[in-house]
Image (tube, rainbow, N blue to C red):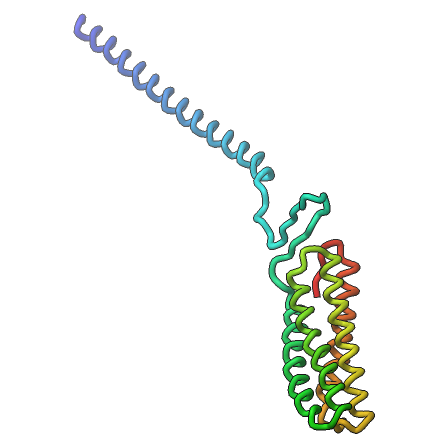
Length: 198
């Protein structure tokens, strides 16, 4: 009888121990789930505070207080202008060499034409590295002026039979196209809040 009573007491303690262990397991899971939920909530709050990836456009403020906007990398249109202006300059040099054989007038036109014809691309390249919007537009404006002057000297040479029109047809057409592209680039730059682009 007593042995039976001891067994019941032991069994009661064992049941109590199992119940307590089960309760602790449930409590641990609840705490883990609660911690995970709190971490997720904290992550949601912090995500909007993480700064976005840095873009290719960097804004700096020089010592004189004027804000500069530096655009790294040239837009595709600017690269096209520079490449075409470079090819134009190469062709103009060849035309100029041929004009020297046509007396004083030919030499005069050749010198002027080679100066302005090579300056179109040189200033377009400088514009790409401009540090301010004003400098950017100024360099493009010089390129535009030189393209217009190149067209003038080519037409003058044709008019005075220093060169045949068909021999400089490409150069005349390219001077006009470069002039149009540069005008468009300057308008875009002036209307842009940043340094602008081609």
